[in-house]
Image (cartoon, rainbow, N blue to C red; front, side, top):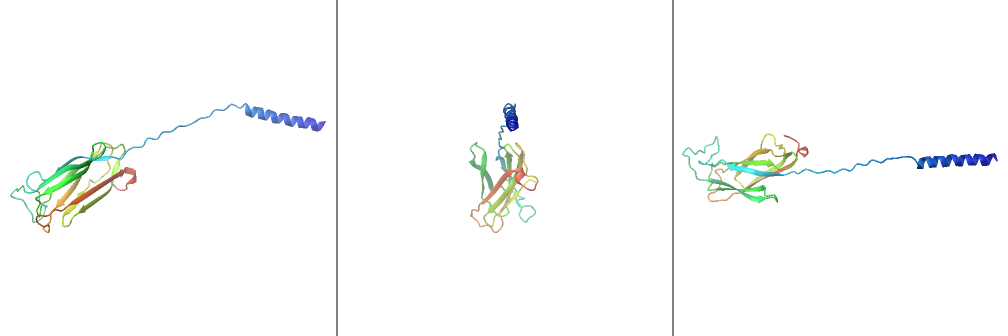
Length: 183
């Protein structure tokens, strides 16, 4: 009899535990998240050439244009736009150039994206013997709506052939600021 009473007591304790656990109050919290990413986007927003009259000559050289001749010309036009009609490729054409001619092209580049960017990489490819160099600002980081000016110096050396065409390409790649080391 003691065994039956003891058995019933254990069953009663178990039922009380199950009923207590089943009737426990609870509340669940949830978090729903949405992440909207930014956009890296730059464009040419202005450009000019230093040849706005007498032809510019290489400074500190034997070349000079003391007579103020305006023989060569430097023309810049949009070659490619993105889906929003922003200029992303420019063609620069220099006509009637001669040894000593040294135009400098100024390019305004604007961050039209939503996050800061820095210059990640740049390359200059020019036909021999043409000398082309890129002059970058000291700090290349641009916040949204900031504009920086980059310059391209083109020099025609004495070794350039008459009545010839030379070409060059300058490529600028920008990336989000936290992926680029340096200024």
